[in-house]
Image (cartoon, rainbow over all chains, first blue to last red; front, side):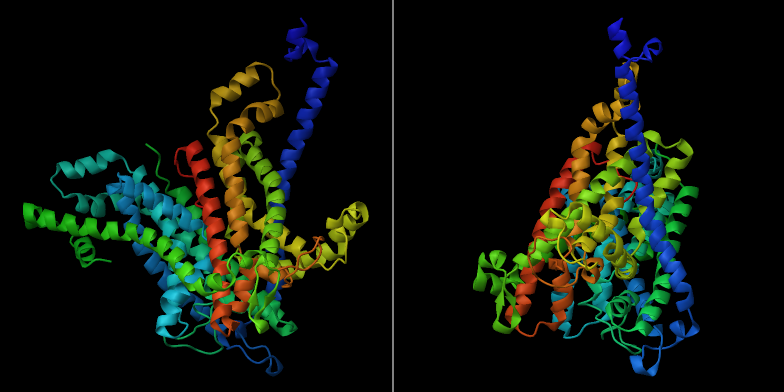
Amino acid sequence: MSIIAAQGIPSSLSGTRWQRRKLVNALMLVLIVLALVVSLVPLIAVLAYVVINGLPGLSGSLFTKLPRPVDVGAGGMANSMVGSLLIVGIASVLGTALGIAGGVYLAEYGHGRFAILVRFFADVLSGIPSITIGLFVYVLLVVPMKSFSALAGAVALAILMLPLVVRTTEEMLKLVPGSLREAGMALGVPRWRVVLSVMLPAAVSGIITGTLLAVARIAGETAPLLFTAFGNEFWQRSLLKPIDAVPLRLFKYAIGPYDVWHRLAQGAVLVLILFVLLLSVGARYYAGRNRLQRP
Amino acid sequence: MADGGDTNLMAQATPRRGSFTRAGRGNGERIFRAVVTAAAALVLVIVVGLGIDLVWESRQAIAQFGFGFLTSQRWDPVHQRFGALPYIFGTVVTSLIAIALALFIGVGTALFLTELAPERLKTPLATLVELLAAIPSVVYGLWGIFVLAPFLRSTVEPFLHNTLGFIPLFSGPQIGLGLLAGGVILGIMILPTVAAISRDVIRVVPREQREAAYALGATRWEVIAGVVLPYARSGILGAVILGLGRALGETIAVTMVIGGRPQITHSLFSLGYTIAAVIANEFTEATYQLYLSSLFELGLILLLITMLLNVCARLLVWRITRGAPGTVTV
């Protein structure tokens, strides 16, 4: 009977040992719920701060004016926004094209040791600190070209994006039923044509989701741009000269001593976070609607 | 991208008869295969190139200081002396604070999401936690300067000082900015990584194991502590190591709240400096070759540590989930 009691048969609910186990259970479950609550606090705190302080900072001049010396008035970040769009745009094109190609290799042709190595290095690359990627691109492009440039910034961000797109593309292609590929091949269509016309279209929604998430990730990056895009205070037409980006200017303004700068930074932070979250939430929503089922 | 790929995409709707001939197929296939293989190889080239590059650029500092670089406390650009110890110290301390915070909260969150949450709430809650990872570093930094640091200075640090002040860690002037602020910010930033990977490895604990324990009369916590956590242990370790790697290399947010003073102290309240932060702050101001080379060597140290941690973590997590994709790419 005592063995049964220890195992929690209802008739023994009054036993002290069972009481203690129940108490420990309740306590730990409360702690687990608490952990979730605590992990949601920063999200809410950061978003609330950004919205509350960012709204007053939003103004037309933020989007239309150039940065100005502090004693001349507030100015804006128009050039930083255009610069960010340029850098992120070029990086997205590079990162997506190369990433999808690499993912196709892993999913369709990658069966050997080389593929395992690539897969592993892609994971390693996604864990490499973004600032060292900035150093790498500095040596690779900035030193030979003798100038910081939008191009160098874009390459640094593309490198950050590459492993994410490679792995997403691979995973999404692997979810496409093999029978589709076999049907195509059975019609005598060459494999590469099957990949382009059958496999990729079937996996496209998942790939788009993964790519959007990767773009959202790089859009807010600052560290890799410090020694590549560098930043400036005026309109830059050339892709081969230093260019400004929103995160760079935010970094400068937030650690600067002037209230004018802080106000501008808080307005711009709202813009940045809206951009990033829209991309990120949009991607998830899109994925939710078009989810490929695992076979 | 290759010409072959583009033109063929355009022609995809109406494949011409000729393209199925043996010769055409061979060529297209060969070109396509070469292109995608090259793209895959690019990943390897970048990682290897990055390593070689940093070693090469830091050769001067390595030749000049040798291992003394790692043990010297003196970082003095004016007299051309460079030692990394204060930066290594700051990096390790902030990362340890971050891990301590993220481990308990992250694993707790993962347990809630897998074991306790009602089915309807699982996905939305997981998405919310993952959104933490979507917030850019510079935004955390801004929030850290204007909200977190003042809060630490006015509330948390006095509280710790008054209750635990006898421990040297919690003594000294309360500034707000500094090692503690850096650690807390990092903890928040790596929390989604730890939570998401822990959730993935906890999810693959076989259902039968849980049910067997429940059938023996175990309470929910006893199932978690006796079955789920032991089964997922090495995967959670992997999650923590991945988080640690991320914390070590995180730059901008820490740079903004760490205070920027290279010193080794006993108090968590004091200002500090990290490897990534000093590279960010001083790289474009380095005026001579040895200075630049020393900063590259700092980058190399960072790269080697994070790569090592990453390789260990990936192996641990891969073994558990057998390479199955997580729901987030981290």
